[in-house]
Amino acid sequence: MTVRVAETSGPGKNTRILIVEDEDNTRQALAKLLSREGFVVDAVANGREALIYLRQQSVNLIVTDLKMPQMDGISFLRELNKHFPKSNVIMITAYGGVESYLEAMNLGAFEYINKPVQIEELKMVMKKILNDKPRETL
Image 1 (cartoon, rainbow, N blue to C red):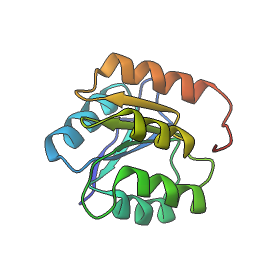
Image 2 (cartoon, rainbow, N blue to C red; image 1 turned 90 degrees about the vertical axis):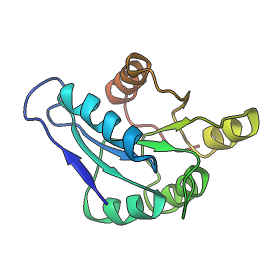
Image 3 (cartoon, rainbow, N blue to C red; image 1 turned 60 degrees about the vertical axis):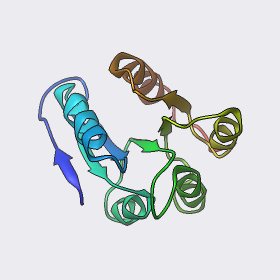
Image 4 (tube, helix red, strand yellow; image 1 turned 180 degrees about the horizontal axis):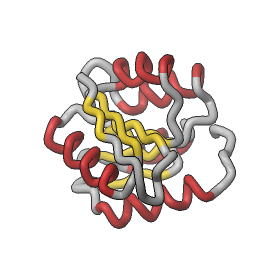
């Protein structure tokens, strides 16, 4: 199921973000918070849904969970590398460890943020990604 929240004003007016998160409350909260910042936000429940979405719509940034059913964040990053290699990705997780951190970063994640996500930290990382030139996936 896709959750779509769009605003037409603010600093993120033309910036499209995809949230990939299996927890309904977290997905909806992130979508609402980011839309209040003026971003165009769409949200899906897992990596498979995200890949379908990305075949139809381009985005500036992806915020994805690590642990999800059907396709987890690491598998999703692998598929992104095959089909959308220049994607800007922030990984979020409540179950992070050094191994998953290293794997996510080696697969091209820009940042790895632990849950509960602090919106100010997320906005700071997003600003850095969106203000920098797109980078190659590792």
